[in-house]
Each structure stands twice: as structure tokens, then as C-alpha cells.
Amino acid sequence: MNTAINEAVKAIVLNAIPKSVTLNYVEHDDKLSEDQLVLVNDVLNMKLKYESFVDGIYDDINPWLMDCSSNAIRVYQSEIKTALESQQDLEIAPEDAISENEDLIRDTLYSRDSSTPVKDLIRNTRAQPLRVEMHTNWEGLDSGYNLWRYGVAYDEYFKHIIDVLNLNPAKLKKVLLAHNLECTGAWPNRKARDGKEYVSYEALVSEMENTTSNCNRLTFVGLFNVSGLEDYKGKITFPAGNCVGFFDSWNGAGSMIEMELLRPLTINFNKAQYGQTEYDSFNAYLDNTKSYSIDSVYGVTNKFWGNQVTTA
Image (cartoon, rainbow, N blue to C red):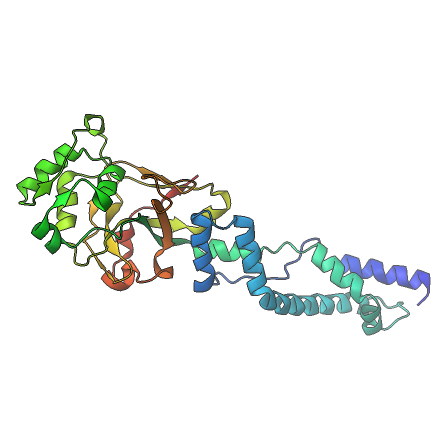
């Protein structure tokens, strides 16, 4: 092909390719898979950077992306062929022109590709049920039966519960005694917490009475929009009105999970929120990605999860 013809062909090829093309089309019901959602937990817990999360999904869907791109390229090649065939005086067969300019066509299509498949999958995934469990060096809160049989003290896991919920131990002791639960040890009067509690004292005692296993972890629930991961800096805020309770994800049990937050509660995953050991940390899980889920144990409706959490 001489230079003049080649330049003419290139001009037709480039003109036939739109300024913006879509090589990877994501259907409205395509979303992140269950395995990919597990990685969301690592981002929330500050164990994986968002950019690495996105790169991992690209690697995971690469075979699908290659198939989509190949199919799209064939469609655009067909349109280019039509454009070439419309040129009556072109001194080269359209098929030959496409073959000789295959690299140009492919490179141009990729450079003009505006598709964002991973972003689209994340957007389509929408809000997911989220639970945040409080972990410590202690396994968790004992069952209601054992609590009322042996009594409680302001120490170990129960102390962490009281402190995280910003309850006044002295006030809580009065409510516990009124419910015939023996209280041992010191229960300091922390007046600075009065009026700043996250849940009511009666609600906490009711949750304690209705625990069924021996490893109940304080658990916050809400809905998390996966699209919020991009701007996530490690803080999750549960809005007032969302519920808190006890859940044992290892044995598939827990309390009623009906304590309502009296005011918003923010958890900072950049550092432990209580205690002095490395085990004193919160752990965030999309509900169906870790051990027993609340949904599988309780069969809850979407209303149970309350409002969406906010991130910062």
C-alpha cells in the first residue's frame, strides 16, 4: 500500500471510531461477587488499600474483560469496514485495510475507552448489611443464664462493653441489682458520662438477659454503601436509631440486637478504641462474609439493619 493510500485509509479508520467507546459494558444487575465482597472487610479494617482492592478485582475479572474487549473490537471493526466500503475509489479491499491497520485500530480503541467496569460493579453492589464486632483479649459476654447464676463485675469483657457504650458503672449497677443480678467488685461513679450514654441502661440489661451462648460480642449493625470505599479514611459512624446487641458469629447465636443508639457512634479503625492490648479492636464484616451471619441466624428483614452508616 503506497503512502497516499495508507494515509487515506488511516483517516477513514480514525474517523469511523467514536471519540469515546465502551469496551467493557457492565449490566445493571452485574455486581461484586461474594469472594470480592470479602476483600471489602480488609479495606474497612485498614488492612488493604482501596487502590489494591480495585487492582485485585481487575485481576479477578481480567478474563471477562478480555472477552468483552475482543467482542467490542469486532463490532467496531465491522463499523470501520462499513466506512471503508462506502469509499468507492479506495484502492484496497476493506478486509486488507483492517488487517494492515489492526494495531492502529486496537490502540485507538483502548485509548478512547471510557468504560469503568470495576467502578460500575462497585456502584451496582449498592448498600450491604454491615456488622462491627468488638473484640478483646476476652472471648465475649457469657450467656444470660450464667450471668444471673454467677453474677457480674466491672471487669474483663463486660468492662469494655460499659466503657464503649459510655455508661456510668454506678448507675448500671443499680439497674442490674433491680433485675436481681449480683454485682461484685467496684462500680465507680463516672458522672461525666451521665447524659452521654449511647444506649439506655434498661436496654442493655434486656439484651444481657436474652443471650444464649457463651461468647457474645458487642455488635453494631447498619447498611454500608460499598461505593463509599473510595473516600474511606478509617472512620465509620452508626447513626442514632440503629441497633446494637450481642452476636456470637462462631456458634450462630446472640441476643435480640434491639438496643437503639441514642446518638451517633463513630468507630475509628485506625486505632483501638478501648483497652491497652492489640486485641482490643473493632472488626468490620459485611454480614454474609464471615462465619455465621446475622441474617442466616435470625432471618432478618432489611429494616433490621437500620440506616446507612457514614464514612470518613
